[in-house]
Length: 193
Image (cartoon, rainbow, N blue to C red):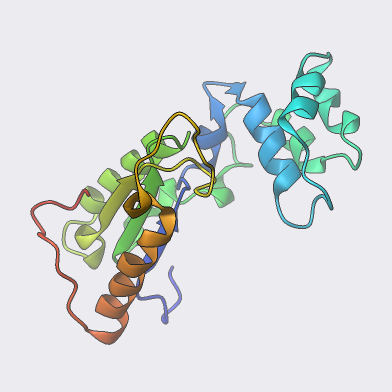
């Protein structure tokens, strides 16, 4: 159950279903997994480049990818030993206990984020599976960002109003609405922005 002080959630570029975010029907998103695990705080002093990961994933066996990185990745081997959805993934996800989400959530995703379809699914289920709770008042905003919102796409320019920093104002307004009772102007009939 949610801790008593939890009144509101802001979920940014993520998924409630960890297994289906990284593995499709037993097939892992190898490059994404290695890239994310290598960049996760506390794992590496230096980020691993795309080129280094490309070199790693061209070599077999797959279960030794983690050893090819300078410092290794224990989590990688663990994930590869759980390619089917099993009890390992259950504590990492909230999909089996979504009915316990009783607070409104603001989901923020990007058009170019690999998790956007997962986030849309999470949003729909959060809103529909608890129609009588505050989670039914959840909203989602999807904008012209990738998983790393500061990434610049040289062939695309959506203008300064599309920078991820513009999301801080709606996030603060969302928190003020649910924590301080301040108004947050949006049309409840249209929870997707």
